[in-house]
Length: 452
Image (cartoon, rainbow, N blue to C red; front, side):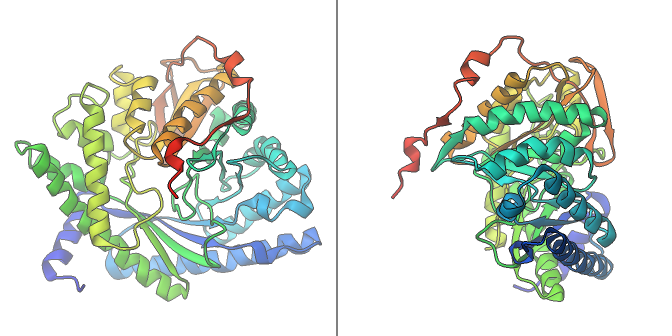
C-alpha cells in the first residue's frame, strides 16, 4: 500500500515534535557455521562475521536516516544462543574469551549491543548451560556490549526452578563485580522468549531463524501520549480506536524502514516489534500515557485496566498495519528507563507488588528495577519466579531484569547514566521464601498447554 502525502507529513510531525524514532535495528546472525574444533579459528570466524555484517548494518542504517529523516537510535546484533555453539569448548576461560571476542567485534563495527550470550533452559540444563551461568558474572564484568539471557520456561514445558535458583546467586555476584551492579542491566531471564526479539538485553537469534534476519523495534510513547491528551473526554472504546489508528501509522513507518534496510543489506526482513519503549526524555514515557488517561499517578487504582487497554490497542493497531509484527510487541514499563515510572516509585504511588500486577497485562515484565544490595539470593530468585509464573500461566512472554545495587537501601537513588537512567531503589519484602525455593525442580506446564 503506497504512502499518501498526508501520511508523510504526519510522520514528519511525529518525528519533529513527538519523539517518534526507530528505537533499534537488530540484525540476527546465525553463528553455528562459525564453529571449529580449533577454538582460535572459531573466535576468528565469529569476529569476522560480526564485524562484516555489523558494519553493513551501521552504514546502511545511517543512509536510511538521511533518506527518511527518521532517527535510528540503536544498531544491534543478536546471535545464536551461545551454549548451542560452545559444547566442544565448554570451559570457563573459553566462555570469557568468546565474550570478549564478540565485544571487540561489536566495538570495531560500531554496534551498540550484541545479544544472545545465553541459553535455552526451559526444561533442564546441560553441563555447558550450568557452566555458562557460573561464568556470567565474569563475562558481564569484562565486556561492555555483550548481553545475556536465559529462557527458563515456556507454557508448554513449565518452569525450570533449578535454573532460577542459580540466577539469584549469579546476579548478586555480577552486582558485586560491576560498578553499581551495572552488569545486571545486561542480563534478562524470560519465559516464552520470542526468537525474533530486537530489544536488549534479551535479544537472541533463535534456532528457527534463517542465517540472517533484520528486526525492527519502533517506539512512540510520545506520539500516543499526544493523541490521548487531545482526547480527554472520549470513552474507553473511542480511546482504544484512537490509539489503534495511531499505532497503525507508527508501525507503517517502521515496516517501511525495515524492509528497505533489509533489501539494502541483502538479508531477509524479519519483524516489526510494536512495543512502546520508553526513554528518560521528558514526555517519552508510558507512565505519562497512563496519567493522560486520567489516572493521577501510575500505580493508582485503575492502572491495570489502563495498561490492559493500551496494550490491546497497540497490538491491534500494529497487526492491522503489518503481517510481520513479532518480537515482544506490547508495552515496556521499566523503572529506570521511564522517568514517569521512576517518579511514581519515588512518590510511593507504585511499589514492587503493584508493578508485578501491572505486568500480568503488559509486556514484558519486571524491567530495570533496582533493589537493595543485601537482598538474599533466594529472595531474588523468588521475585523472578513469581513474575515468570505469570507468563507460564497466561501463555505470554514475561521477563525480569533486576539489579541488586551494592551498598544501597530502599528509597535511595542509583544513577546508571545514559540509556539506563536513574531510579529509586525499591523495597523488597523482609519475609523469606528460602525453604520454598530450595525445593527446586520444575513447575509443571499448566493445563492450558494441552492445545493439540
